[in-house]
Structure formats: C-alpha cells, structure tokens
Amino acid sequence: MIHKTLIAGSALLLLLGVVKGRDAWSYLSTACNRVSASVEGAVPIEFQIDRARKMVADLTPEVRNSMQVIAREEIELERLSEQIVRAEQMSARHKDEILRLQADLGTGEETFVYAGRSYTEARVREDLSRRFTRFKVDEDTLNHLQTMRDAREKNLDAARQKLTAMASAQKKLEADLTNLEAQQKLVTVAQASSDLVFDDSQLARAKELITDVRTRLDVAARLASVDVGVEAEIQLDGEDASNVTDQVADYFGLGEKNAKLASAASSK
Image (cartoon, rainbow, N blue to C red):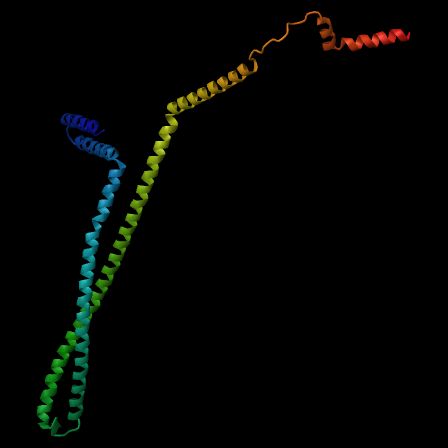
C-alpha cells in the first residue's frame, strides 16, 4: 500500500512539472491529503493504539512538574501568610503606641514619663511624627503583601483546577485506551470467526468424511448381522415330497374346509 502511494506521489510530482500557475497548489494540496489518508489507513490499529498510549504517558512528566510548581507555590504562600501575620501584629502594636502618644499630647502636659524617663512635649511630638510616618509606610507594605497574597492564591487555585482537570483527563484517556484495546481484541476474534464462517470448505469436508465413515460402519455392522442369521445349518433328513399336498392344505387351511364340506354332505 505504501509502495503504491509513493508511486502515485511521484506521478503527481511529474504532473505538477507540467501544470503551472495557481492550479499547481490545488493539485499539490489535494495530492497531499490523499497521500496522508492512504498512509494513515495503511498504519495498523495496534500501532496507533500504542502511539496514543505513549502520547498519554508523555503527559505524566508535565503533570508531575505542575504538581511540583504548585507545591512550591503553596510553601511560598505559607511563608508570605506568616510574614503578613507578623506585620499585622506589629502594625496593631504600633497603632496602639501612636494612639497612646496622641492621647498623652492631648492632655496639655509639658513633660511625660515613659519607662522611668522624662520627655518634653516637643520630644514626644517629634517621636509621634516619626512613628506615624513609619506606620504609614508599614501599612502600605502590609497592603501590598496582602494584595500579592490574594493574587497568588487565585493563581494557585487556578493551577490546582488545571492540574485536577489534566490528571482527570489523563485517567480518562487511559481508560479509553484500555477500552479500545479490549475492543480491538474482540474485533480480532470476530474477524477470525468470520474467516471460519466464510472459508468452511475444510470443515464441510471433515463433516462429509465423518458421515461417510459412520455410514460404512453401519453397513458393515448390518452385513455382519445378516451373515450370522443366514449361516448354513446341517440337514439331518432329506426333504419328503410325498406330503406336499398336505402341507399346502395345512398352510391355506384347506383341510378344515374339506372336513366341514364332508360333514355337511353326510348330514343330508
């Protein structure tokens, strides 16, 4: 089949050498389609199933790589979440400290004591300004970290769904291939049975031979039975021809009839 296809392709190339212009592409595309269909039809189904199974098996490295990427991202997200928790705790503490300083400055006092040390109102106000500036920077950083975490969580969820779909599709393809292999085996058995039905000459001859042998055995058995029944016996006495009339009369019942006629005549 492939040899014929190659010959046809060569002939077509010679034809294309003659045909020029825009029609050449039409001839070439049509020929390529026919050659492709012929070659594909010549490939055994078993080979195509093996090829498909290899393609499905090649998905395994990609699935495992996706699993590794997802696992790595999960670890990174856990670290990021821990960082955000620490930042939130620190932000809450700094907020309380800022509000405390703000409240102390609102009392109108000129000096303030913290941890056993005294500070002027100007010193406390300066410290409050620095704390507040740093707090706003930390808040912006925290908001950025939270936004980044939310985005990465969405990407992680999408990757998980894709991995689940890919793994599920691979399992389904493996099941489909198993079913195709079973179907191919059944088709092979059916084709063998079909060949037996259509090519039954040898089977018919075997049946005819068995019937002939059985007939010959039956004939031989019957002949043996007849031979036993007609076996010659020893003649002890010669045949007596003198009483043949009596034998005829006895056989046809003539003796009785003659006796009745004689009795009727005497009574008259």
